[in-house]
Length: 190
Image 1: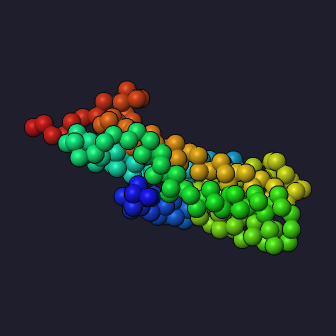
Image 2 (image 1 turned 135 degrees about the horizontal axis):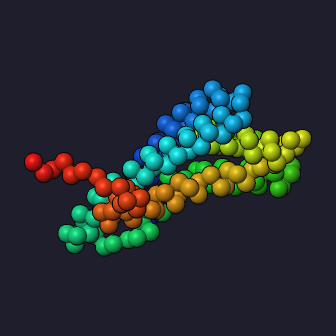
Image 3 (image 1 turned 90 degrees about the vertical axis):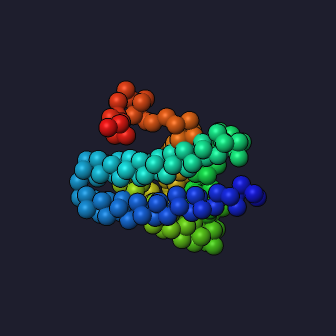
């Protein structure tokens, strides 16, 4: 419970970033929905852009914690980024489970809950809409839209992995550019 109290701001910040990116992703999906190839490229771009935003947030959290860890005011917690990202994505996971439960139970009330949760999930995960639409078209051309409900269980995984990786990189003062061999110019020297 202490973990949630200490990190609720970061979880909410990641979720608010998701909401901002869902607006971007939804607009891009609507603008490119007439052409499947363009829709795929635009949707992948909005997903990558979303993950970059999450990466910077997670890296900053890790970098701040590194100062506390080095000063002895905090013990190192390597899984903290995963847990923060998991907390930020808990609404997405809950919605996916309710969508799946509504489909599996197959009663009227469960179906109604599933449809409402599906609409909310699409509303708050707009960056994935293009990929989900293309998957629905490919997997179930004649089926009900909700047949691919498990996509909503998959969509939080990249965000959770990005949150964990970015926190680790920030808490160890490593930059993603180092992985790709990019040397950044140090502007602090005169």
